[in-house]
Image (tube, rainbow, N blue to C red; front, top):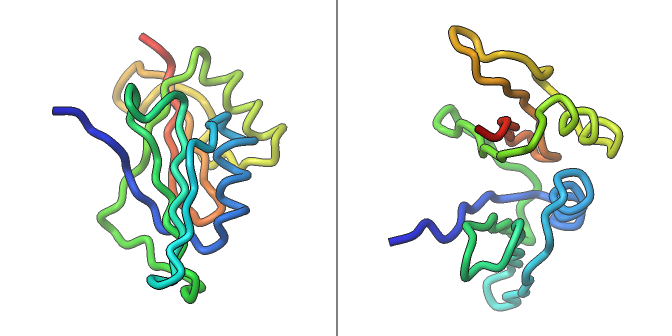
Length: 127
């Protein structure tokens, strides 16, 4: 078994694709409109879907907002250096919501950023 993808519903697909590609460095792998269902799917990631878990963005054409709810936590991305990655996110216009540093009650170095729809993304140092 293998985890294939994680899906997030987004309100502005172009803005979200821009964030995940230009701010977080993912590649747009594929995109398809479903006119009968009035939605578009876009798949992004750091490598081919056959070898990597990817992110599926779903844009429902007639939906202007979503409630994130209390069950959603975050997506985690492994980076070489959390401090450098957070600064790059900031330079590219991303929102760093928790500055890089050690985890509370631990030693893991992490930071949090937020995508345009308010989803939290954790940056973790390798190792």
